Length: 332
Image 1 (spheres, rainbow, N blue to C red):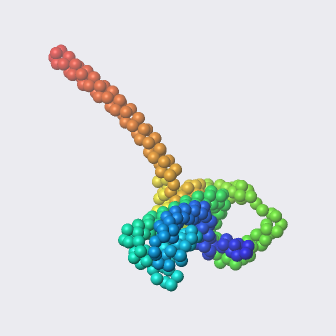
Image 2 (image 1 turned 45 degrees about the vertical axis):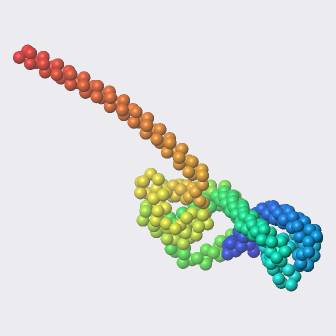
Image 3 (image 1 turned 120 degrees about the vertical axis):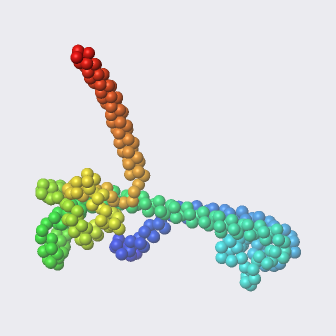
């Protein structure tokens, strides 16, 4: 059983793993849904038994003894009438006996109760269950993104270092040798305990990337070449970065509109793009826009004051020029 559970770690079984996790996440909702349904069935069965089972009327045997003879059978009959099918032991529908024995008023009540259960309670349970599962799935994926942030950053920096090398095509030709070397290193770390922490790996990659930053500038042509690499596409998918419109990623990462990207811009930008947009992103944008609007308003006020002073200075210069012109005319 444990081995079967461990199979869920494979990527090909990701959808099955999500379904199993959703079932476990919705167990509490299912429990309270069962409690609500049992309580409703109990109330309806109690009322129905008092009307049919203990009324003393001359009713058919299918109603008085078989279907509503005691409280347990009354609850079971009510449950069948709102779920599977409302029929007697011989297969005849109980609705016909109810209509013939109790009249159309009871049948109208049955129709209303049936619609209330099927359209109301069942859909409400389904909606709450789906909402709970979706919310749990979103929280789990957010938690996984937070935990894997350091590992994804290391993989991204390592891939950038590999993409920046001119011998990448040669490395692809020796792919089998590379896999054998990686397998040996993994075996050595796994059984000898030579494991590097994420902080140490990040420090080593930061040193290598720091050496690249002085000479590496990623233009749009270089980025368009990189974005066609399958390793980079797979990494972006693992990072939960949307790759449907890959041509726009360069414009998104180039925040200063310089037409070139640095290594830190690529790493920080792609790490920020992980996952779906959240409320904090919208609030941060709104606060930034408000701050910029305040700065623009302050600049506008200063320009208006400067314009007013300039206008007064121009008027003073015109008055002085007129005075000088009048003085010259009077002297002549």
